[in-house]
Length: 238
Image (cartoon, rainbow, N blue to C red):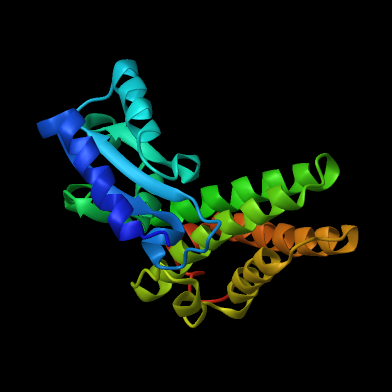
């Protein structure tokens, strides 16, 4: 049986052997980091080096090729200085979704302000809206739609954090901290993930629900009241 703990130990050993003192952070994201992994889950490994070159990336790729379950490995790799200068709205999700194995994210967390989290909600809603509309017209893909619901789940995590001050990694715990409209999106995404196949009618219905939700949050975060924070106490559809 696959053990993420055992795999991460081998991963950390290989990374530290190859890059030595250049390693700033090793972490784990995604479903394994949340404790919600299934047999089909990817391994979202995070590696931050003191700096990053194309040669480092090639060496890292060769290193991953030596590890078991290579086909499941993805994740994030970056240089430290680039990450410290990253868009703060993106850093909010990165920091809270990353479980550090070695190193600390404290210096990044200190850079994130409330307005950055609000921006994360706005950017997330805009991205979901655009891709949902594109998918409904062109690809009509259930795979893409599942990915969009996953992105929406990250956005509602940010919404819940703004309202409660608590970041819930696990979906079940997150449900209780959401307003009805946001909870419906989270639950629809969970339902969609469980479906082995999606009919045309279901694709249309799930897309309509997601599009309306994203539209509401775009309008809300674009309003003067939303920018001032006065609108964050109610559901997205109000």
